[in-house]
Image (cartoon, rainbow, N blue to C red; front, side):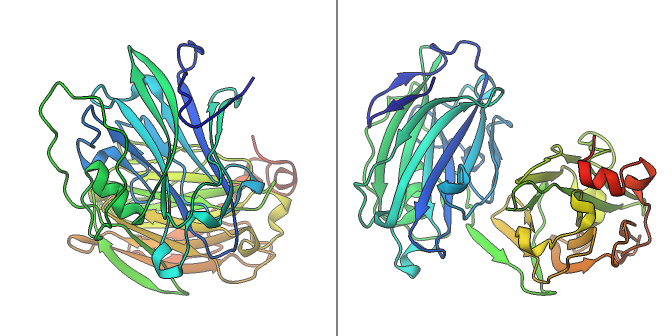
Length: 412
Protein backbone atom coordinates (compact mmCIF):
# COMPACT_ATOMS: atom_id res chain seq x y z
CA UNK A 1 0.00 0.00 0.00
CA UNK A 2 1.39 3.39 -1.01
CA UNK A 3 2.11 6.08 1.59
CA UNK A 4 1.54 9.75 0.68
CA UNK A 5 4.07 12.03 2.37
CA UNK A 6 4.20 15.67 3.38
CA UNK A 7 7.16 17.97 2.81
CA UNK A 8 10.02 17.09 5.19
CA UNK A 9 8.36 13.84 6.34
CA UNK A 10 11.32 11.49 6.13
CA UNK A 11 10.54 7.80 5.94
CA UNK A 12 12.48 4.54 5.94
CA UNK A 13 12.48 2.77 2.59
CA UNK A 14 14.62 -0.37 2.84
CA UNK A 15 13.96 -0.82 6.56
CA UNK A 16 10.23 -1.11 5.93
CA UNK A 17 10.76 -3.04 2.71
CA UNK A 18 13.81 -5.24 3.45
CA UNK A 19 13.46 -7.30 0.26
CA UNK A 20 13.53 -4.37 -2.11
CA UNK A 21 16.74 -4.06 -4.12
CA UNK A 22 15.69 -1.96 -7.11
CA UNK A 23 13.29 0.98 -7.30
CA UNK A 24 11.83 3.13 -10.04
CA UNK A 25 11.61 6.83 -9.24
CA UNK A 26 8.76 8.36 -11.23
CA UNK A 27 8.19 12.09 -11.66
CA UNK A 28 5.10 13.60 -13.24
CA UNK A 29 3.41 16.93 -13.89
CA UNK A 30 0.79 18.75 -15.91
CA UNK A 31 1.95 21.73 -17.93
CA UNK A 32 0.06 24.82 -19.12
CA UNK A 33 1.13 24.71 -22.78
CA UNK A 34 2.90 22.39 -25.20
CA UNK A 35 6.19 24.28 -25.55
CA UNK A 36 7.53 23.17 -22.17
CA UNK A 37 10.57 20.89 -22.11
CA UNK A 38 11.04 19.54 -18.59
CA UNK A 39 13.98 17.34 -17.63
CA UNK A 40 14.69 15.17 -14.62
CA UNK A 41 18.23 14.80 -13.32
CA UNK A 42 19.96 13.11 -10.39
CA UNK A 43 23.01 14.22 -8.46
CA UNK A 44 24.96 11.42 -6.74
CA UNK A 45 26.37 13.21 -3.70
CA UNK A 46 29.07 12.45 -1.17
CA UNK A 47 29.10 13.42 2.47
CA UNK A 48 29.97 17.01 1.59
CA UNK A 49 26.85 17.43 -0.52
CA UNK A 50 28.87 17.57 -3.76
CA UNK A 51 29.47 15.19 -6.64
CA UNK A 52 32.83 13.43 -6.61
CA UNK A 53 33.16 13.54 -10.41
CA UNK A 54 31.08 14.56 -13.42
CA UNK A 55 30.14 10.89 -13.76
CA UNK A 56 28.02 11.33 -10.62
CA UNK A 57 25.56 13.56 -12.48
CA UNK A 58 22.69 11.85 -14.36
CA UNK A 59 20.81 13.94 -16.92
CA UNK A 60 19.77 13.84 -20.60
CA UNK A 61 23.39 13.78 -21.78
CA UNK A 62 24.58 11.21 -19.23
CA UNK A 63 21.80 8.68 -18.55
CA UNK A 64 23.86 6.10 -16.63
CA UNK A 65 25.97 6.68 -13.52
CA UNK A 66 27.08 5.17 -10.24
CA UNK A 67 28.67 2.12 -11.91
CA UNK A 68 25.34 1.38 -13.59
CA UNK A 69 23.28 1.75 -10.41
CA UNK A 70 21.32 4.80 -11.65
CA UNK A 71 19.66 4.79 -15.09
CA UNK A 72 17.67 7.67 -16.56
CA UNK A 73 15.11 6.53 -19.14
CA UNK A 74 15.28 9.58 -21.33
CA UNK A 75 13.77 12.95 -22.11
CA UNK A 76 9.99 13.27 -22.19
CA UNK A 77 7.69 16.17 -23.00
CA UNK A 78 4.43 14.60 -21.91
CA UNK A 79 2.35 15.40 -18.85
CA UNK A 80 1.21 13.24 -15.97
CA UNK A 81 -2.09 12.33 -17.68
CA UNK A 82 0.00 9.84 -19.65
CA UNK A 83 1.72 8.32 -16.61
CA UNK A 84 5.10 9.30 -15.20
CA UNK A 85 6.65 12.05 -17.29
CA UNK A 86 10.18 10.86 -16.40
CA UNK A 87 11.46 7.66 -14.81
CA UNK A 88 14.79 6.77 -13.22
CA UNK A 89 15.85 3.30 -12.12
CA UNK A 90 17.99 2.89 -8.99
CA UNK A 91 19.68 -0.35 -7.98
CA UNK A 92 20.08 0.47 -4.30
CA UNK A 93 22.51 -2.31 -3.43
CA UNK A 94 24.79 -1.27 -6.32
CA UNK A 95 25.13 2.42 -5.47
CA UNK A 96 28.88 3.06 -4.88
CA UNK A 97 29.97 3.49 -1.24
CA UNK A 98 31.10 7.09 -1.76
CA UNK A 99 27.53 8.13 -2.65
CA UNK A 100 25.52 9.04 0.43
CA UNK A 101 22.62 10.87 -1.16
CA UNK A 102 20.73 10.83 -4.46
CA UNK A 103 19.08 14.18 -5.13
CA UNK A 104 16.26 14.08 -7.70
CA UNK A 105 15.62 17.34 -9.51
CA UNK A 106 13.49 18.77 -12.33
CA UNK A 107 14.37 21.73 -14.56
CA UNK A 108 12.77 23.61 -17.46
CA UNK A 109 14.98 23.70 -20.55
CA UNK A 110 15.49 27.27 -21.89
CA UNK A 111 13.08 28.55 -19.24
CA UNK A 112 14.44 32.09 -19.13
CA UNK A 113 14.35 32.50 -22.91
CA UNK A 114 10.75 31.25 -23.06
CA UNK A 115 9.52 33.07 -19.95
CA UNK A 116 8.56 29.78 -18.29
CA UNK A 117 8.67 28.79 -14.62
CA UNK A 118 7.34 26.21 -12.16
CA UNK A 119 4.49 28.46 -11.09
CA UNK A 120 2.85 27.29 -14.33
CA UNK A 121 3.12 23.63 -13.28
CA UNK A 122 0.20 21.59 -11.89
CA UNK A 123 -0.11 18.24 -10.12
CA UNK A 124 3.64 17.68 -9.86
CA UNK A 125 4.73 14.62 -7.91
CA UNK A 126 7.55 12.20 -7.26
CA UNK A 127 6.93 8.58 -6.32
CA UNK A 128 8.88 5.40 -5.51
CA UNK A 129 7.90 2.06 -7.04
CA UNK A 130 9.19 -1.45 -6.49
CA UNK A 131 10.88 -1.97 -9.86
CA UNK A 132 10.22 -5.72 -9.87
CA UNK A 133 6.52 -5.70 -8.93
CA UNK A 134 5.64 -2.22 -10.18
CA UNK A 135 3.91 -1.49 -6.86
CA UNK A 136 3.90 2.15 -5.74
CA UNK A 137 5.45 2.46 -2.27
CA UNK A 138 5.74 6.19 -1.60
CA UNK A 139 4.31 9.33 -3.20
CA UNK A 140 4.98 13.00 -2.58
CA UNK A 141 2.94 15.78 -4.20
CA UNK A 142 5.17 18.81 -4.69
CA UNK A 143 2.38 21.31 -4.04
CA UNK A 144 1.63 24.72 -5.59
CA UNK A 145 4.02 26.97 -3.67
CA UNK A 146 6.32 27.67 -6.62
CA UNK A 147 6.30 31.02 -8.45
CA UNK A 148 9.19 32.07 -10.73
CA UNK A 149 11.54 29.15 -10.01
CA UNK A 150 13.09 27.31 -12.99
CA UNK A 151 14.50 24.33 -11.08
CA UNK A 152 13.24 22.09 -8.28
CA UNK A 153 14.89 19.65 -5.93
CA UNK A 154 11.98 17.23 -5.60
CA UNK A 155 13.30 14.70 -3.07
CA UNK A 156 16.34 12.81 -1.81
CA UNK A 157 17.16 9.16 -1.26
CA UNK A 158 19.91 8.94 1.34
CA UNK A 159 21.74 6.36 3.42
CA UNK A 160 21.31 6.23 7.18
CA UNK A 161 22.87 3.49 9.30
CA UNK A 162 23.13 1.22 6.29
CA UNK A 163 19.50 1.73 5.22
CA UNK A 164 17.95 3.97 2.54
CA UNK A 165 15.51 6.71 3.55
CA UNK A 166 13.32 9.04 1.49
CA UNK A 167 13.19 12.78 2.15
CA UNK A 168 10.52 14.93 0.38
CA UNK A 169 12.17 18.31 -0.31
CA UNK A 170 10.18 20.43 -2.85
CA UNK A 171 12.67 23.31 -2.84
CA UNK A 172 12.78 25.79 -5.73
CA UNK A 173 15.80 27.40 -7.39
CA UNK A 174 16.36 30.25 -9.80
CA UNK A 175 18.84 29.75 -12.65
CA UNK A 176 17.72 26.37 -13.98
CA UNK A 177 19.99 23.37 -14.36
CA UNK A 178 23.14 25.51 -14.35
CA UNK A 179 22.30 26.76 -10.85
CA UNK A 180 21.78 23.22 -9.56
CA UNK A 181 25.05 22.10 -11.15
CA UNK A 182 26.92 24.96 -9.50
CA UNK A 183 25.39 24.12 -6.14
CA UNK A 184 26.23 20.42 -6.34
CA UNK A 185 29.74 20.87 -7.73
CA UNK A 186 29.24 20.17 -11.45
CA UNK A 187 31.01 22.71 -13.65
CA UNK A 188 29.13 23.62 -16.85
CA UNK A 189 29.53 25.96 -19.79
CA UNK A 190 26.47 27.90 -18.64
CA UNK A 191 26.70 30.82 -16.25
CA UNK A 192 24.60 29.97 -13.21
CA UNK A 193 22.47 32.42 -11.31
CA UNK A 194 22.90 32.37 -7.52
CA UNK A 195 21.09 29.31 -6.15
CA UNK A 196 19.03 29.16 -3.00
CA UNK A 197 20.91 27.22 -0.34
CA UNK A 198 19.80 23.74 0.61
CA UNK A 199 19.94 22.42 4.17
CA UNK A 200 23.52 21.92 5.33
CA UNK A 201 24.88 18.46 4.45
CA UNK A 202 26.23 16.02 6.99
CA UNK A 203 29.98 16.74 7.54
CA UNK A 204 32.20 14.35 5.66
CA UNK A 205 35.03 12.34 7.15
CA UNK A 206 37.34 12.49 4.12
CA UNK A 207 38.91 15.32 2.09
CA UNK A 208 36.64 17.26 -0.24
CA UNK A 209 36.31 15.81 -3.72
CA UNK A 210 37.92 17.68 -6.63
CA UNK A 211 35.70 19.78 -8.88
CA UNK A 212 34.90 17.75 -12.01
CA UNK A 213 35.66 18.84 -15.56
CA UNK A 214 33.15 20.54 -17.80
CA UNK A 215 29.87 18.93 -18.85
CA UNK A 216 28.34 20.75 -21.81
CA UNK A 217 24.55 20.87 -21.71
CA UNK A 218 23.47 20.87 -25.36
CA UNK A 219 20.53 19.37 -27.24
CA UNK A 220 20.47 19.20 -31.02
CA UNK A 221 17.38 18.29 -33.06
CA UNK A 222 18.19 17.54 -36.67
CA UNK A 223 16.11 18.87 -39.54
CA UNK A 224 15.30 16.83 -42.64
CA UNK A 225 18.47 15.19 -44.04
CA UNK A 226 20.63 17.39 -41.77
CA UNK A 227 24.05 16.29 -40.47
CA UNK A 228 25.99 17.39 -37.39
CA UNK A 229 29.51 16.65 -36.20
CA UNK A 230 29.99 16.06 -32.47
CA UNK A 231 32.89 14.88 -30.35
CA UNK A 232 33.69 11.18 -30.43
CA UNK A 233 33.61 9.48 -27.05
CA UNK A 234 34.45 6.13 -25.51
CA UNK A 235 30.75 5.26 -25.15
CA UNK A 236 27.61 6.06 -27.14
CA UNK A 237 23.97 5.55 -26.23
CA UNK A 238 21.14 5.47 -28.77
CA UNK A 239 17.46 5.41 -27.83
CA UNK A 240 14.47 4.62 -30.01
CA UNK A 241 11.58 6.51 -28.42
CA UNK A 242 7.89 6.61 -29.31
CA UNK A 243 4.69 7.84 -27.69
CA UNK A 244 1.85 5.77 -29.18
CA UNK A 245 0.01 3.44 -26.83
CA UNK A 246 -0.13 -0.29 -27.60
CA UNK A 247 2.43 -0.06 -30.38
CA UNK A 248 5.56 -2.18 -30.45
CA UNK A 249 8.57 -0.80 -32.29
CA UNK A 250 11.90 -2.61 -32.46
CA UNK A 251 15.26 -0.85 -32.53
CA UNK A 252 17.90 -2.28 -34.85
CA UNK A 253 21.54 -1.22 -34.87
CA UNK A 254 23.26 -2.19 -38.12
CA UNK A 255 27.03 -1.86 -37.90
CA UNK A 256 30.29 -2.09 -39.82
CA UNK A 257 33.45 -2.87 -37.83
CA UNK A 258 36.92 -1.46 -38.46
CA UNK A 259 37.71 -4.73 -40.21
CA UNK A 260 34.76 -4.21 -42.57
CA UNK A 261 32.52 -6.89 -41.03
CA UNK A 262 28.76 -6.27 -41.18
CA UNK A 263 26.13 -7.23 -38.64
CA UNK A 264 23.22 -6.07 -36.53
CA UNK A 265 22.08 -6.01 -32.91
CA UNK A 266 18.34 -6.41 -32.33
CA UNK A 267 15.74 -8.26 -30.21
CA UNK A 268 16.95 -11.72 -31.27
CA UNK A 269 20.68 -10.94 -30.90
CA UNK A 270 21.28 -8.55 -28.00
CA UNK A 271 24.99 -8.27 -28.77
CA UNK A 272 27.96 -8.24 -26.39
CA UNK A 273 29.73 -5.63 -24.29
CA UNK A 274 32.95 -7.64 -23.94
CA UNK A 275 33.51 -8.89 -27.50
CA UNK A 276 32.63 -7.93 -31.05
CA UNK A 277 30.60 -5.95 -31.90
CA UNK A 278 30.86 -4.27 -28.45
CA UNK A 279 27.21 -3.25 -28.83
CA UNK A 280 24.29 -4.27 -26.60
CA UNK A 281 20.52 -3.82 -26.75
CA UNK A 282 19.08 -3.29 -23.27
CA UNK A 283 15.99 -5.38 -24.04
CA UNK A 284 12.77 -5.49 -25.99
CA UNK A 285 9.93 -3.11 -25.12
CA UNK A 286 6.57 -4.47 -26.24
CA UNK A 287 4.51 -1.37 -25.53
CA UNK A 288 4.76 2.42 -25.58
CA UNK A 289 8.21 3.52 -24.57
CA UNK A 290 11.83 3.14 -25.41
CA UNK A 291 14.55 0.74 -26.47
CA UNK A 292 18.22 1.47 -25.84
CA UNK A 293 21.43 0.53 -27.64
CA UNK A 294 24.80 0.94 -25.90
CA UNK A 295 27.98 1.26 -27.99
CA UNK A 296 30.75 0.18 -25.61
CA UNK A 297 33.73 0.48 -27.98
CA UNK A 298 33.13 3.07 -30.71
CA UNK A 299 36.82 2.85 -31.61
CA UNK A 300 36.21 -0.68 -32.96
CA UNK A 301 33.47 0.45 -35.36
CA UNK A 302 33.22 2.51 -38.55
CA UNK A 303 29.53 3.00 -39.27
CA UNK A 304 26.18 2.62 -37.50
CA UNK A 305 22.64 2.73 -38.84
CA UNK A 306 19.74 2.97 -36.41
CA UNK A 307 16.46 1.69 -37.80
CA UNK A 308 13.01 0.84 -36.47
CA UNK A 309 10.69 -2.05 -37.36
CA UNK A 310 6.94 -1.81 -36.79
CA UNK A 311 6.14 -5.12 -35.10
CA UNK A 312 2.36 -4.64 -34.73
CA UNK A 313 -0.57 -4.18 -37.14
CA UNK A 314 1.35 -5.79 -40.00
CA UNK A 315 3.39 -2.65 -40.56
CA UNK A 316 0.32 -0.42 -41.01
CA UNK A 317 0.48 2.94 -39.27
CA UNK A 318 2.60 6.04 -39.49
CA UNK A 319 5.90 6.05 -37.62
CA UNK A 320 5.53 9.83 -37.50
CA UNK A 321 2.15 9.60 -35.74
CA UNK A 322 3.87 7.60 -32.98
CA UNK A 323 6.35 10.48 -32.54
CA UNK A 324 9.11 7.96 -33.14
CA UNK A 325 12.64 9.36 -33.00
CA UNK A 326 16.22 8.26 -32.53
CA UNK A 327 18.30 9.98 -29.84
CA UNK A 328 22.09 9.66 -29.98
CA UNK A 329 24.14 10.64 -26.90
CA UNK A 330 27.96 10.86 -26.87
CA UNK A 331 28.16 11.20 -23.04
CA UNK A 332 30.33 14.28 -23.51
CA UNK A 333 27.51 16.79 -23.52
CA UNK A 334 25.84 16.39 -26.91
CA UNK A 335 22.47 14.74 -27.46
CA UNK A 336 21.29 14.55 -31.09
CA UNK A 337 17.64 13.79 -31.87
CA UNK A 338 16.60 12.58 -35.32
CA UNK A 339 12.79 12.92 -35.55
CA UNK A 340 10.55 11.43 -38.21
CA UNK A 341 8.96 14.10 -40.39
CA UNK A 342 7.20 12.20 -43.19
CA UNK A 343 3.85 10.42 -43.27
CA UNK A 344 4.18 6.79 -44.40
CA UNK A 345 1.44 4.38 -43.34
CA UNK A 346 2.52 1.25 -45.19
CA UNK A 347 6.19 0.76 -44.28
CA UNK A 348 7.49 -1.98 -42.01
CA UNK A 349 10.91 -0.33 -41.75
CA UNK A 350 12.37 3.14 -41.35
CA UNK A 351 16.08 3.97 -41.23
CA UNK A 352 16.31 6.99 -38.92
CA UNK A 353 19.88 7.99 -38.14
CA UNK A 354 23.34 7.17 -39.54
CA UNK A 355 26.58 7.59 -37.58
CA UNK A 356 30.02 7.88 -39.20
CA UNK A 357 32.79 7.05 -36.70
CA UNK A 358 35.67 7.35 -39.18
CA UNK A 359 36.21 11.07 -38.59
CA UNK A 360 39.37 11.68 -36.47
CA UNK A 361 38.26 12.78 -33.01
CA UNK A 362 34.68 13.22 -34.11
CA UNK A 363 31.50 11.45 -35.16
CA UNK A 364 29.00 12.53 -37.79
CA UNK A 365 25.31 11.98 -37.03
CA UNK A 366 22.94 12.24 -40.00
CA UNK A 367 19.16 12.37 -40.29
CA UNK A 368 18.33 9.88 -43.08
CA UNK A 369 14.61 8.93 -42.71
CA UNK A 370 14.35 6.29 -45.43
CA UNK A 371 11.32 3.96 -45.57
CA UNK A 372 10.89 0.45 -46.90
CA UNK A 373 8.69 -0.10 -49.93
CA UNK A 374 4.95 -0.54 -49.56
CA UNK A 375 4.38 -3.69 -47.47
CA UNK A 376 7.95 -4.88 -48.04
CA UNK A 377 9.33 -6.61 -44.96
CA UNK A 378 12.95 -6.97 -46.11
CA UNK A 379 15.33 -5.24 -43.73
CA UNK A 380 17.81 -2.51 -44.68
CA UNK A 381 21.46 -3.39 -45.33
CA UNK A 382 24.43 -1.27 -44.23
CA UNK A 383 27.39 -1.74 -46.59
CA UNK A 384 31.11 -1.70 -45.65
CA UNK A 385 31.56 1.74 -47.24
CA UNK A 386 28.89 3.23 -44.95
CA UNK A 387 26.12 3.49 -47.54
CA UNK A 388 22.86 1.62 -47.01
CA UNK A 389 19.91 0.39 -49.03
CA UNK A 390 16.34 -0.42 -48.05
CA UNK A 391 14.36 -3.59 -48.96
CA UNK A 392 17.25 -5.96 -49.71
CA UNK A 393 17.96 -7.63 -46.35
CA UNK A 394 16.41 -10.79 -44.88
CA UNK A 395 12.73 -11.10 -43.95
CA UNK A 396 13.47 -12.27 -40.43
CA UNK A 397 9.99 -12.27 -38.96
CA UNK A 398 8.42 -14.16 -41.87
CA UNK A 399 11.15 -16.77 -41.74
CA UNK A 400 10.34 -17.28 -38.08
CA UNK A 401 6.61 -17.52 -38.76
CA UNK A 402 6.19 -14.01 -37.45
CA UNK A 403 5.34 -12.06 -40.56
CA UNK A 404 1.67 -11.19 -41.08
CA UNK A 405 0.25 -13.04 -38.08
CA UNK A 406 3.32 -12.37 -35.94
CA UNK A 407 2.82 -8.69 -36.70
CA UNK A 408 -0.77 -8.86 -35.52
CA UNK A 409 -0.21 -10.83 -32.35
CA UNK A 410 3.28 -9.71 -31.37
CA UNK A 411 6.49 -11.69 -31.18
CA UNK A 412 7.89 -14.12 -28.66
